[in-house]
Length: 156
Image (cartoon, rainbow, N blue to C red; front, side, top):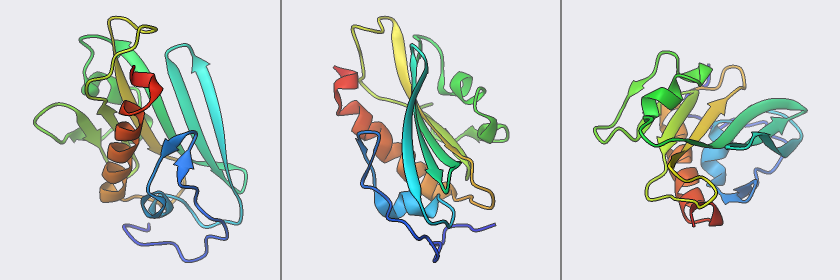
């Protein structure tokens, strides 16, 4: 298992934005496997959820998501729906973040939308690549992704 180190044989360039959200290339790179080709695919499986799937050599490697949950639902409620967070615990006193080396959920601060009244926006991150786990990189990426979403039209 690779933890917190760069993978030397990535034959692709990590983009500076994933599905419109600005991200730190170095942090994203730490969470992706070796390979030759990277692609992103935007999905909307249900009205209140959007996903940005990052594929390396045609296989899902990383998914970033935005999901509107009813007001009153907590980050722990959302985390229960993410397989990569089965053994994770709440890691901040404010109740806004749950994470592990392979996944995270974060509540997006001060985000409202007329399209989703009485709902709270959460972002999620799932690492699908085998042998990739990095707690620090996961927290950095979900934090920057959440801020990018908070600064976008999604939260207006």
